Amino acid sequence: MKRKLDVERIKSEDAMADKSLDEINGSIEVPQNAGFLKTLMAYTGPGILIAVGYMDPGNWITSIAGGAQYKYRLLAVVLLSSLIAMLLQSMAAKLGIVTGKDLAQLTREHTGKLSGWLLWIVAESAIMATDIAEIIGSAIALQLLFKIPLVIGIVITALDVLLLLLLMKLGFRKIEAIVATLVAVILLVFAYEVFLAKPSITGILNGYVPTAAILQNHGMLYLTLGIVGATVMPHDLYLGSSISQTRKVDRADRQELAKAVRFSTIDSNIQLFLAFIVNSLLLILGAALFYGTHSSLGRFGELFNALSDSRIVGAIASPVLSMLFAVALLASGQSSTITGTLSGQIIMEGFVRLKVPLWVQRVVTRGLSVTPVLIFAFIYHGNEAKIENLLTFSQVFLSIALPFAVVPLVIFTSSKKLMGEFSNKLWVRVCAWTATIVLIALNIYLILQTIGFF
Image (cartoon, rainbow, N blue to C red; front, side, top):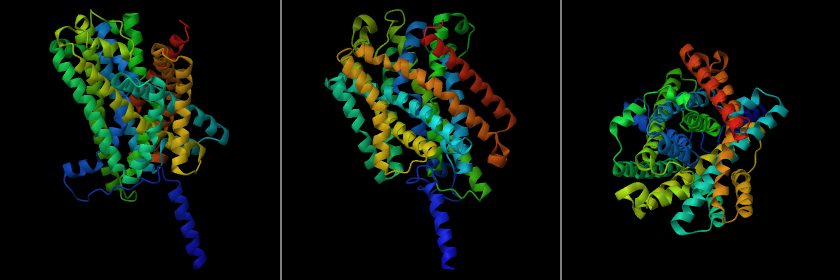
């Protein structure tokens, strides 16, 4: 009898060890037989952590430059990108909820040991690439706000991983609340600045209608590729498949499972709609303030200075606008670093199956990301333009890593064997594969353009 109990205990411990983000997996209770709003509030949270990846500093320059150069015409691209993101992230959440495993774990299970290590390297490169944009954005924001030298700012942003360690002790709901607050800051800042800019409402509405000119104009096409290709972040798919499991769900109960999938999808779509609003505001701000006056914007410092220059933005120019921009940039960078660190842990545990203390995981994943930025900052000390060029190269790594996350996601969620009745319906499979092919094609095109192939 004792032997049987020991066997059951070992099996139970093994099952716990295999849980994604074990310390928060299933840690949040959800109400039973509650109303719609109360249930939705219980499931609200993971979506906001996903959404910050779609409004991180890496997207800012492209969106604002799109408005500055082509006014409102690329808003249709922002809309298309957001719809693709909603589709893929809902699939990632469903995968985690139904299978009880994240995308990294499932990919590793369906590959050999060598290929698992190779996939980990690709995924880890994507985390590093994402962190580069977040670290640079946060460090530049600290420099603009407090005149802190860039190298010191980079070190400060590297230490914020210690804050996440503390927050994890307080509970995952606290992390969700903090990230939601940072996102609210970003949204309010840009809503206020766009309100002051007085954009054309008719122009905005017309901008959401796709036109053939987007494909015919080479410069417009390039920015289109940048907006779409850099929107769907591979680390967000791994993250979404994991943190969707933070709610306590009985997978043996089909109705409870269906409810979890439904409300997690609603949460994801609501938060990604907010990301869509933020990205639209960025492009609208670029169009309303800089179109025809300063269309060559390409750096955070230039944007900061332009917002207080009356020769560029007219009567609304103010140091306050510049400071608000820097505050939003800092909020974006900090919220994104929290989710980036969590994604690093998910990828390391899922692909490598490396079980080490949590603080070691956090420090290693953060260290891998910040090292290349620090090296570049030391080499080009005082040359912010060169350092910001890292943002362009970071998108190449993301482009390379994207298929390794999207393709398995579509395959797994379309599998009847894996997902049962929750497998993708035919129309979802068609849309998902179409979106995947489009994303891969656009990213290949971006890579070839970056290396000067054409």
